[in-house]
Amino acid sequence: MKDYKYKVFTDAIEKHISTGLLKPGDKLPSARSIKKEYQLSISSVQNGYDYLIYKGLVRSLPRSGYIVNYQSYKASASHSPDLKAIPRDSVFRENIFLTSQQKQHTEVANLNAAVPSDLLIPQKLVLRTMQQVIREKGAALLRYYPTNGTEELRELVAKRQVLHGAIIQKDETIITDGALQALYIALAVTTNPNDIIAVESPCVFSVLEVIANLKLRTIEIPLKNYNTFDTDHLADACQKNDIKSIVVTPNFHNPTGILMTDETKQKLYNIASSREIPIIENDIYGDLYFTGSRPTTIRNYDQQGLVITVSSFSKTLAPGIRLGWLAAGRYFSAAERLKFSLGRSVSPLNQEVVAKLLSTSSYDRHLRKFRRQLELQAIKLANHIHQFFPETTYTTIPQGGYSIWTQLAPGTDMLAFYKTCEKFGVNFTPGNTFSFTNNYDNCFRTVFSNHLTPESLNAIERIGQSLSH
Ligand SMILES: Cc1ncc(COP(=O)(O)O)c(C=O)c1O
Image 1 (cartoon, helix red, strand yellow):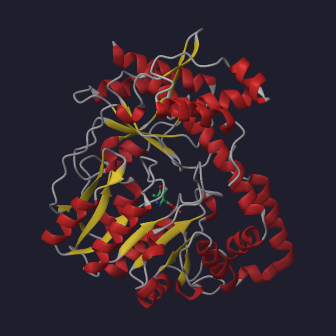
Image 2: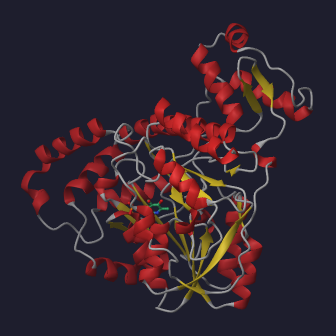
Image 3: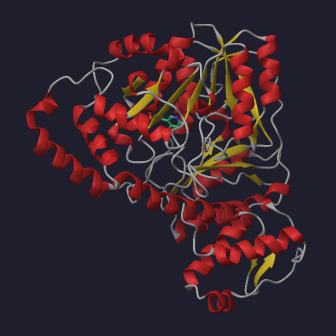
């Protein structure tokens, strides 16, 4: 992938910090001198410094420019939840709809819904393609389409996975009504009611809802220090329990935005495959990486058809398209039968539209721009929380995707906190909706796929400051 222009100076600063040539508190060159030295625009320099602040390496001081940070984000305390490897009934402690459907009318910043904002959806591209497809296909779009989706779309979806090393066949791929339906199918064909499954924790509430609906019992596997999936915990859970399925989001996990390393993916696969436990990997955010190249999937390590990969175009194109897929591996026949019973076929129009976008360079061109927009929003938001919330606050550094996870100091009065948020018209998603346990009551998720205005940033600033008093 092409590097950002600012890398010419941020790489040098990062190197000097890591070798100790630049020490905490050292003053860094002004934006103006960097602009001159590296022949960059002032906005590139600003983006570069934002990037270093976001990584926790640099701090901006009012009217004094930039200095090397005293304490990086990574050094700040995070508390891994104390989760025991015991199965629980999948029941929410709070009414999830009360917490997830907050008031819409007084909002200054709607930071609780993981949907692309209207500004970031490629509206023109999607609508133009729809019109083109209607002109070309006409009334044929009004018929039933094949239950598993068109051959062309399945082939295009499968081929894209090969680009990052996952071998997925079109004949095991099923087009679904979004990722959630794909996940429902994957879980339903690998489990029976009352079975025990392992799921990453925290975990987005929509996925927990599917688990609860299928009447499964869960063992929540923590993300150690909110930066890595705890494979030791999983191994222990597998040894003590008859786990029937493992559900994870390895790439840019919702709500933390973290990326599972290849080493952890391999370890997780080894643990599961040694016991023939299917892994359901949710790769819905995989295309939304901020740096480097497209991450691998756990499927890359699988030769046995044990990994079911699910995904959709809800986060990369538009959620209203309702177009997802699963690669069902050895569970294909059961998955195909279940898909048929859930509705004959996904909208023919939307299938043709996505196939058209994937068969040209349009989708990738859109993704390149979209990733950049998301990264800048993530930098802005993370820096803002870091700058204005108390030092005891821990914030994840998302490497892609849509969301940031924040943990406030233990004992924070969360009721008062959410009242303050309401007063300033800001919606965060409360941490307690991301688990069947009470481990995340002092956490919240912030989504940065919405446009951040000076007004919304100001509101976040005031909410953070209210915690210091
Ligand atoms: C991890 C994860 N899976 C699934 C979904 C839902 O996806 P879809 O709209 O494609 O059903 C979401 C969106 O909220 C998500 O974050």
